Length: 286
Image (cartoon, rainbow, N blue to C red; front, top):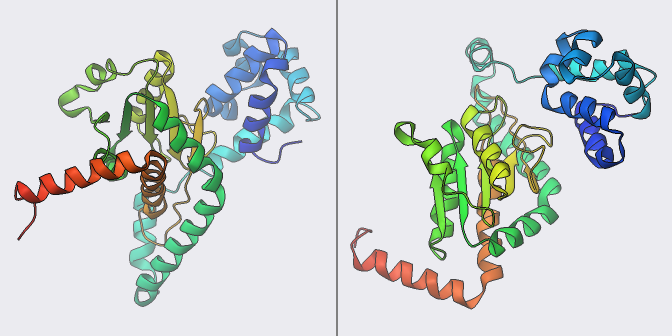
């Protein structure tokens, strides 16, 4: 029996094709609307999922639970463990008595996040890089605090590959930019809880267009990860008021490094040309 929502989602995804049509409808609703499941009665969930209440009971049992209530407990626990509001964390930081140790504690947290993230992603990073290399065009998106991660990835990648673009949505143009996503492309989306609407929309568009989707996120069941081809998970614990993005940046940098290594001599030549051009055009102080 799964112990948490992440394990449940992984179990459902792994066994989805084996489930009956009724169970598939119920299971899909559980993953697509976890907030509703946490606060709704079984009868209401069954109505929204367009299945019989008895089907939810039997689905729960098929997934290893004694009944519906035990399965629903995982959804309730998920809601309770949502990220603490930034304001609450800021108040705690101001009232705290450990300000002198804050700089040290931040560095310790960054180191921990990097270690946890590395343990999760060593194999997947190489697989994601190979997927990106095969795509004729790569689209990248990260909004709000995740924008620097996405921008840094694009900046480094474009030094040796031209067919990489950043989806920014400036002046409300995101929907127009999403038209450029094609079936044989790859799309990288960066987001963590609470997940930005724009990031979810990019992931949705990538799936609609048949683009390969790579999610850089904080959970295997985040809105951008559930249907992704590759999921790179980063830890963002921090004693500060705002989550740490050090590990997310490390993933982006690692991807760029792997891509250069995979491309080999041709990529090095492109990088050399880019460097020469930047210096020749006065991009740097002499």
